[in-house]
Length: 392
Image (cartoon, rainbow, N blue to C red; front, side, top):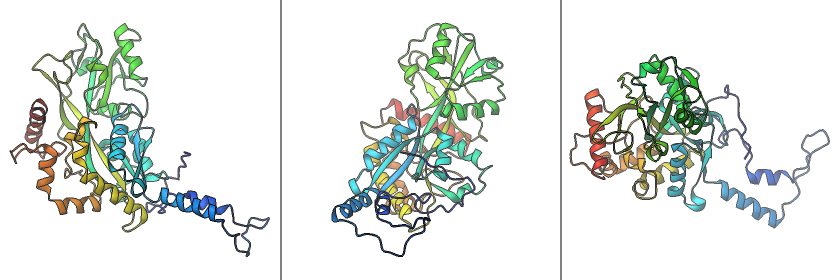
């Protein structure tokens, strides 16, 4: 597939074909058009289309009628797995076909949602949305959200001898390759914390091997992804390698999170945990005009997705689906009207109960929701930990 970009100065009300792209049937039909030598169309009507070609045109139209493109990120990230899960669950043959798209990363996903042909939906990070406001001040009018997805936990993994974040100042820290969540959000978080480090952007596998071998002065790696990370869960780490705690700032864009001994039994002693933060992830949609063809496609995707969340929260899908709450809000954005209509029809209380496993305590916030105060944030984390240890 050839990706064609449009100028960022394009009107926010994109053409309904997402950049006036030509459908397959239009391309086929164009072969029959007659033109003068100077390129102007002739007054003569086009040659009749053969029955075989007409049937092919109808098949192409049918194939494209209910296709939705989802910008998902790079292959090693959690977003592409979520997009693939969505595609499996909402697939309805000719009635709905979701195409997960491998992209350059979380920040680029938002750009793709705004400007790239064929992209109707994208998985984006909350801090990327905030950064884009300086470039696109009316961005909240151009996109809507379908639901709040998984949090991506910050893992600051260090060599023995590094005891605090301050110890990393001036040291070499790897943020993975450009385009990953770590490469985008990691430097933002470190700058916010006032940590001036030597930033590198090489594959984490290479940086971890350098840490083990004591090469190139590599002191730490920064992962931002859904826990548990296989490199820490299944790798062999001896001699004091560990995670650093990261303080939570209630005024920041991030959520409090915890790494536990259950997540990483080789690295965190039984019964202990490491406080950190997490980057919220959003399933967003372009704000197509109501009643337009593209709006109808995204609306159908939302209806199918909400109705089949129980399947996604079952075996065979990413475990973070269990922490998704359909009515969790995303500050600063309006929800896709079709998604809000589904919530209104089905009742918010039933949605929370179904998505959270019904803790039996209506005072506990559902996972994925954003509590209003620091005290509630702590309660929220305690509830998630209780939910995880009890297998619900």
